[in-house]
Length: 234
Ligand code: UTP
Image (tube, rainbow, N blue to C red; front, side, top):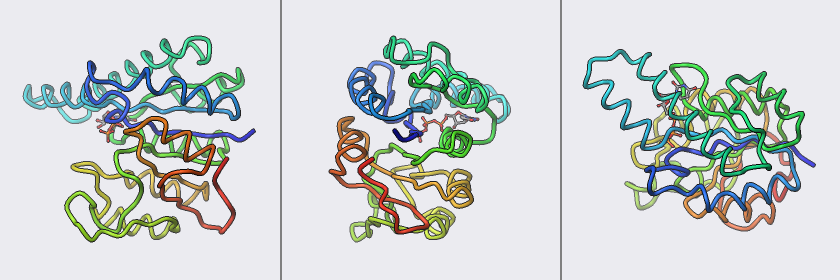
């Protein structure tokens, strides 16, 4: 049994409230949790972006807009917990310590954001350190890490494997792109470097891709690791 921390971007799980992938993710998360200890950090998605845009129009400061974003991530986390039913710990963890404590239940632990000024990728990267995860997974809308934004550069090169240092250099050039979003935020990339926990980046627009990559080693992804040790399948 391994310990797995997944950053499940809101733009994947709940891009819009009516157009969400929660039902499709339930069997996938349950399959992973049947074999491994699972922690899921949920993003804000379209809901957070809508609220933040309105907050800005009202002249509300960025820190307060972040607090609103955090509330939306926790609302999304609440929805996922309720949909998972018995498989999940029944409360959204509001800190890393709480997530660690809830993990003792051996149920799926779900959390959202915690502190203004960052994203749920950074929350998940620190959680991976706190629970001594074997692997940190970032579920996004591209099939891995490229040297340039693959959506705007036809010749962008996909990295099957790369070192944390290479990841940091790509992230700091702003060359990592999925539309307007980075594949991983820079705070999370720095934490990946200091923790030496392997990071897997994969496309979650088809939910079954997550279990195929993690449990069966099938499908595209990028693996960031400082060693040559085999990471997948789990
Ligand atoms: P995310 O940016 O993590 O959401 O949080 P997301 O939906 O996963 O992002 P994408 O679209 O998939 O890439 C939404 C917002 O909540 C606030 C930030 O304002 C962030 O943009 N937030 C989240 C925080 O301030 N702190 C946190 O710890 C988490």
